[in-house]
Picture (tube, rainbow, N blue to C red):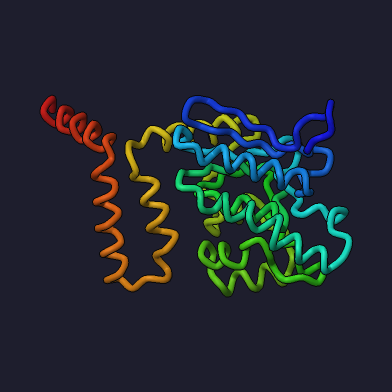
Length: 257
């Protein structure tokens, strides 16, 4: 818990069907410590509310997230235990949300901070954004799912070379690699994230939830299995009451020409 009188290390804000989640340890570059992990767990629990239709993930201060706070991980045994029991549940809860997540990356996203951004569905970046694979420099392989996310986004060969180099990837190169979808000026970054979240939240019914499930599991299925999964997803989405309303509105637009 955050000590009394101090600002929360994670701030949440509800705007209608959108939940904003802001990392709030700016003096520590939003490094992930035990208090922040506990707060993020609560935030993802709030995001799972059926009334929430989209999530915006931002960070206060100059940097998005410096990764794990090394001052919180004194030895190797503690580090592995924390990965399994503190970090992994937070990452999995974010990655498996059945609603769209838009991340706005300002400044550096390093190590586990980059993993948080990668777990989002849409990533926006300011021109100052940097993605830093910080593990090799301290003698570690990637963690927090980055070895799963990155090959699916930018390819295995490119990931190995980049992670081994430890070099920072700037916003322009991240855009060229497909790591982010858009570069937005710093003063407009958060607003654009909320705008995109509002557009996604307005999509009716179960369309986006089922789309996320299809994409998440597509790599382990054959084409025939994926076709069947698509049919099942269409059946689920078709039964949602909002779909009938959307179809009626579409027919009305067609009739009006």
